[in-house]
Image (cartoon, rainbow, N blue to C red; front, side, top):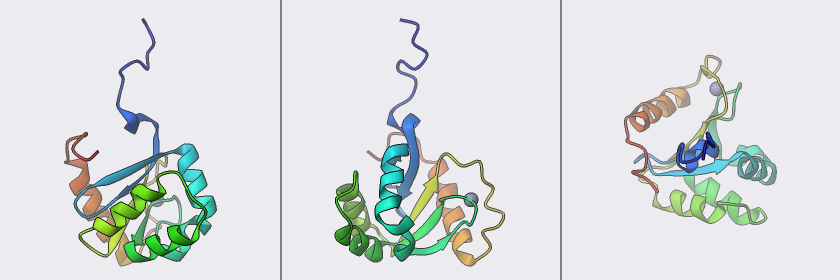
Length: 131
Ligand SMILES: [Zn+2]
């Protein structure tokens, strides 16, 4: 009855990594799913366009991500990620490291500005819009 976690927040509470498209559609991964995904996809490097050197936030090429997931062993959320990539309105997807307290100050290439713009929009999106 006094469980502090009861009804606290939806599944986002457990999310460690979120993958978003330009519309703010999101696939959230918990810590285990995120670790497995990164382990099985070479840290997503083959699909990475630009990345923060200090955390796991990055810009991904959607088509390359689909190829990468096709080649990788089945991963949790893999299908959702492929659907997200297939339906993405632009060529890029955006990974947000939800566990990192990172200001991305060392992320200096233009990919960061693109990423930051999407994140600024997404923060304004009420939770629960994207399922
Ligand atoms: Zn960072």
